[in-house]
Length: 112
Image (cartoon, rainbow, N blue to C red; front, side, top):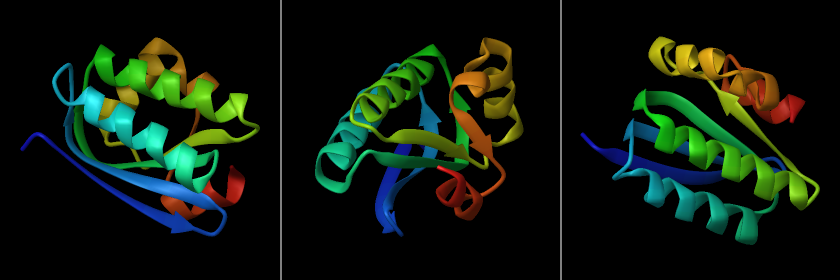
């Protein structure tokens, strides 16, 4: 499995569910989805990482870009429910100190 994306509105936030592997080859798809979501649906973005099994530095780059774009428009980004390998990367790189990580989508939407 490579990457599947699904976007939906939850309250005044947009949630993008990310499923599969986020790497050099799939990161551009998420980048495009995030840009479109922020442009069309608003700058409060939650990335649902429940089904994301792998992420490399290309994926981290997309998360940073999403955060920069959303915050530049007065919004924000939150990450929801990363699996252990992804959570480890977020902690190791310190990105979890810049982008808030929550246990589930509902909490992320509520706290964003």
